[in-house]
Amino acid sequence: MSMLADYRRLERKLARKLRQLEALKRHPGLQREIEFEEKLFCLLADYNFSTHEVFSIFAPCLVPELKPWAPARPRQQGKRRDIKHYSNPYTGEILSVKSGSLNKTLKSWRLRYGPLEVESWMSTQSG
Image (cartoon, rainbow, N blue to C red; front, side, top):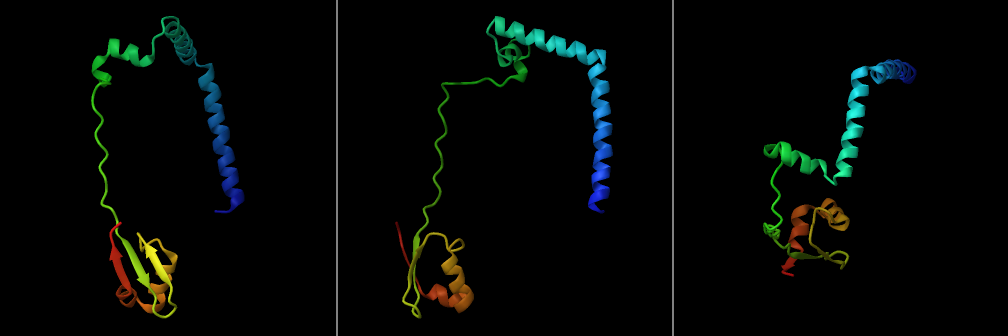
């Protein structure tokens, strides 16, 4: 579809949606709901209540009970990655990485010399 045809289609769709919006704005049911919402929020502000508190009064089964005293679950630690040290025998370059899949130099070595040869250059140390 050409850009102009796409533009015209979206323009017609927007005009149709704007007509629907204007019709909805004039609907008496919407006016009534807007008025109710405004009065409700004024009432909540007068009594210093939040909507969460109102729901907990009228529909407690819909509001999850908050337990501020509940202990937080400890965050699980992932396995520490070993640092891998590579020594390129052709260039003498030494490379230390934790993630081989993210290191550009290691990727280029694997493409140039092959992954098996590059792995033979590796020694690991914890830490």
